[in-house]
Image (cartoon, rainbow, N blue to C red):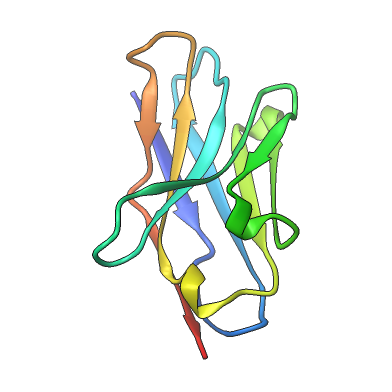
Length: 117
């Protein structure tokens, strides 16, 4: 069983920064893609950023140039550095990790990010 443990959320003013962390704990054979999703009230969950085991990253257009995803494969940990935060970034942020099998699709419990104007 794999558990994803997120940390780093909180309240910040517009223009500020936060860094989210997500550690995968448990018996892990292999983690391929790691990603951050977010869900704002009344909206669907959306993919914010993803990163492959080789370090290739992708971002949703709305965060390009402001957010940076990175990972430490030795620690099975993924990070999301969020700069120049905007009120519209307010959401619950969820960590996701995928392994080698289709059933290896793990989610964290989420961490709240609130950006005040």
